[in-house]
Length: 400
Image 1 (cartoon, rainbow, N blue to C red):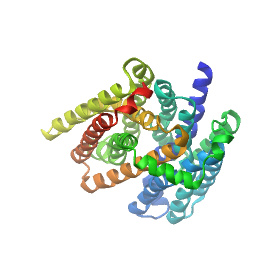
Image 2: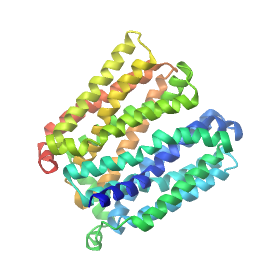
Image 3: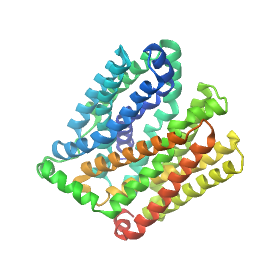
Image 4: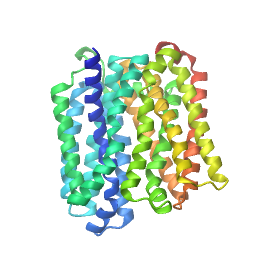
């Protein structure tokens, strides 16, 4: 059972990581792509922006498909599209073609963002679900830790197109794992009960559920602290602090280690203290640590080591907030887990993208605006988490 538990986490984690891998490995290639395709920075940035937008929108389709046709067919279809899009990106003759193939790549990657969460809900609830979700995230952590470094090495050795060939290989490996190792967790009789009309009814039910919506937005604003860091950290750490791209990649990965390392405690913490209790405490810790960073930055302390220390603490708390809010939000919606996972992922991606864009309006290459935006997101996460758990106490008992 234990070996099967870990094996499932590895398979689901690698499938989920396909999308993040296509983002994180690609970041160091942005300047090279602009030069090679004679494109402006804004045009190259658009290839990243459309990826996020498509990831958010398409989740609303994959979730219902996973409920109607089972969990495996959407994963197969998504990974095939992801592989085709990655090959197209590697061969793209212009920035317009690159953007188009990034859209196709994102449509495919979206399956891996939705279906694995539904599979977790099919198999487990409560602290066991938190444990599996955290193990899955541990596998996904390979992307932000290693992908930027791998991307830098590939660009140096074979140019920016080598990044997309590597992403293609990752997609092929994920598809083989899905074909050979993944079992169907949505029985045929349950699929027969699902139709597009029932999906729309399910979305209405979810939108009217204050616990689901509140916890979804709590997770969204928690994740937005990382979205803001993702968008602004290269300008701050490389431009303001003078780090090399390689050293920047190490700093980027360090925060990921904190996030995913803390996430591995979720199963044990939930079993001992209860899911709602650790979610509330983690949201509080995230808000306090980010408030501390905002305060020291406001009084003029802009040392890199100070910022790094606060972020390590904050992202450790975030590693508890993100999976536990997801488990609590999905806990009462097992019959429509695919749709619930899709709506959650879509809303969180839209919120994160909007926050990232809004924070970018104030960015000036210094730490202040980035840190202030992250602090605001942490505060909203704290408030929404407390209100969600207080207004919907019934969500607590089954999960604990």
